[in-house]
Length: 380
Image 1: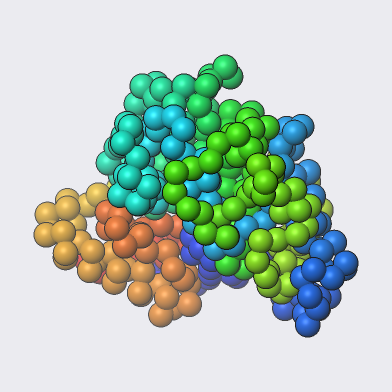
Image 2: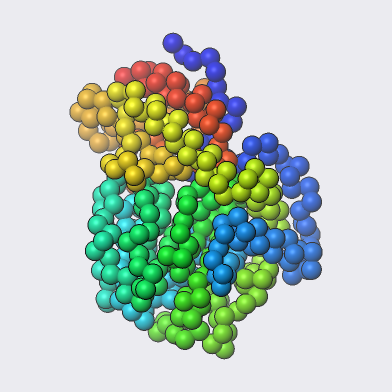
C-alpha cells in the first residue's frame, strides 16, 4: 500500500543540498546587499565565514583558509594549476570528479610524470601503492560513487610531496585528519547546505612554501593566483577575496556555520550524518532488491549514499532500460512530493543517490524509505 507519511523536507539532492533545519529566507535579512564586498562590515562578514570554518573544523596551527571563485571545482583547479609540476604526480580516481582531475592533469596541464590509481564505481584503488614522495591528488569522498576513503593512514607524516584533497562532500560530515592533507577544498553547497558559486581552500605550511618557492611553467589566470612577488597573498585568507562574492551567499554561509556551532559543532554534524546512513543501512539490510554501490562497508559514504538495484528482473534488463526504470522510480516519488533529486549521477551506474549530509533530518530519511519500496513495486 502507498505510505501515508511523507518527509517534512523532501530534499535529498547531493548539491545544492538541503538547507539546515528551520531555515527560511529570513535568515538572509541581515545580508549586506548593495554594499561593496571590500567595505569594512562586508569584509568582516566574509572573515566570519573563514573564522567559523577554521574553528569548527579544528584546522591545525599554521594552516590558512580562504574563499575562492567557482565553487569546489574552482578551488581544486586553483590548487592543480598553482602547485603541480615540480614533482611527479599520483592521481587517484574512483568516480566522475576524480576522473575529471585526471583528465585536467594529463590533457590540460600535460604533465609527463603521472601515475594513475583508478578503480571502478563502488571500489577504491589500492592506496598503499600511492607514492607520497610525489604530489598526490585524491577525493576524500566520491560524491558520484558513494565511496569514501576510510582513513588517511596511507599518507605518511614524513612525505616529501604535497597531498591535494578534494573534500567537498566530506568536510563537516567526516572526521578528516587535516595534518595528512596539504590542500583541502570544498564548497558551501554540500554538507552545510549553503548556496553555490563560492569555494573554500585550506593550505598547509608546506603548500604555502611550495607556492612561494615554485613558479609553474604555464601562465596562471588571475583567479588562480595566490602569490604576488613570490609571497602568499595573505589578504585572500583574511577576508579579501580574489573576485566579487555574493553577500547573500556569504550571509547564508554564516547562517549555516552559526547553526552548526549552536548544535555542538563538528561532532554533532558528523553524528547527524552518520545517523542518516544508519537509517538507510538498516533498511538495506532487510530489503532484498537494493544494496550499496560501495562494495566494502568501511568505504560507504555517509553523505552521498549511492544505492544499486539488485533485483534479478532488473539486472536482466539492458543497461538503457535499467536507467529508465531507475528514473521512473525517482519520478514517481517526485510526483508524490515525497523526494526530489535523488537519482544517481548521470555518469554513474543507474540507481539512487540519497544525500545524507548533516542538514538532512533522519526522520525524513526514515519517512522516505517505505516510499522507495512502494515505488519499486510500481515500476516492476
